[in-house]
Amino acid sequence: MISGIKTMQQTSLKVSETAKISHLKKAIGHCLALAVLTLPFSSVQADDLAQIFELAATNDPEIRQARASYNAAHTTIDQGRSFLLPRVTVGGSTSRDTSGPANASQFGPGHSFENGFNSKGYNLSISQALLNFEAWYAFKSAKQSDQQAAANLAQAEQQLILKVATAYFNVLRTLDNLATFRAEEDAASRVLEQTRERFEVGLIPITDVYDSQASHDLVRVNRLVEENNLNQAYEALEAITGRPHNNLETLNSDFPIESLNPSSLDEWVNLALDNNLAIKSAQFDFAAKKDDARSARATMFPTLDISAGYGWNQSANPFSFFPAAASERTNITLNFSYPLYAGGLNSARKRQAYYTRDASEEALMKTQRDSTQSTRNNYRSVETDVLAVQARAQAIISAESALEATEVGAEVGTRNVVDVVLAQRTLFQARRDYASARYAYVINTLNLKQAAGILSPQDIIDLNNWLE
Image (cartoon, rainbow, N blue to C red; front, side, top):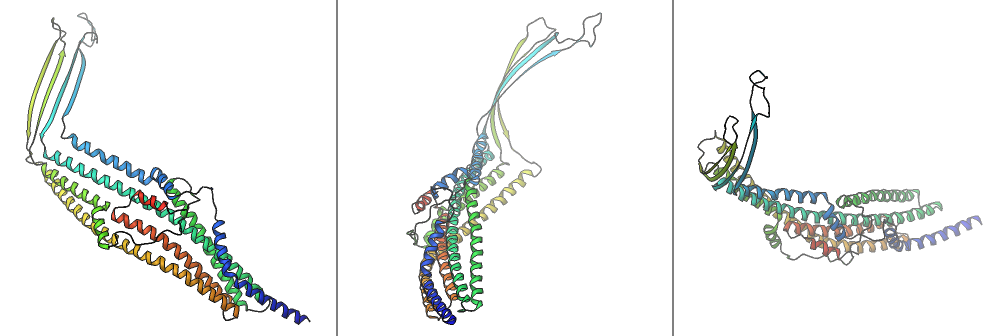
């Protein structure tokens, strides 16, 4: 009788186990939804990409530094122009002179400040450069440097767009990964429990329990690591805006993954050569260095300037019976200067300026080549991402079919629980890869637009419209 009860228990357990395995796939979907709902939230209202970018544009230290650097560089125009404009100088002086014996004697009192006289005067001078090639080319160089500073600022603003978007979607990617790891851990726990029950009644060997336990432990470790990755992703976003963002809007599942317009690689390369801000910065730098070389050569050119001055002075005389008289003086001077020899200083500075110009030209060529390479690589990455997203979506379908087939095999006894666990792992990994491919497409698209020099805040607005 005891053996009959045991046989009934084993039969009942087999039926129960078959039912559990058949419903395992449905449980996976419920686990994914539950994992998303149980993620920590710090507020009810979610932050979107546009709000975070607006905060970053105000609070990010790098963009604030870039703006301050531009304002500092912009002053070089006024400095360069000052050597071409008139210079006006006003001066004045007043003094009191005294004299007398050091000590009093029978001939009179000693030295006293009361027995002195005052002198005073002022002057005004004006000078204007009439011919100064060195100052002229220096002013032209300053204007080119100002254009370079503006290009650098625009490049920093584009980099801010890319940095904010990358940090934002890194958080979303990590959230998706964590959700799948939590769902996978829950599914692995269910399988481990079922495996232990089957082992206890003698249906499977102990090795299956060990395999299930190892799978469960591995998923738990992955979940712990991903939780740490999520904290780091949140910290990276907070470092940009200076505020915590623990609740973000997610990317809509209908977000279009498609090739960009223009669709030709050569068109994107030409767009980059015309608009890339790194190239423009290098071009302005090269133009400035050429004017610096001309300015250095012009130090050996003659200069001509004109100056005028006026002075008034009044000096009293204590030994005179007449009142103090004032005097005036005026002058107009035309100055001509032609440097003949300065110990080799001017020649050395000229050579230095020309070598610097040559180095800037080579830097421009390198920037153009780097931009072309970056544009081509980013273009190919976007095209690959389009195909990869499609392939990842198909991989999910294939993994679901494989899991379903494995479950059927487990029901009829041709597959075991370990096979089911591996099929589950493949499905969860396929979902993580699919989500990662979508985010990679978004970031690589922004990288391509930055390489082409057309990245703008409008791209943030367009992306924000696809968040929910």
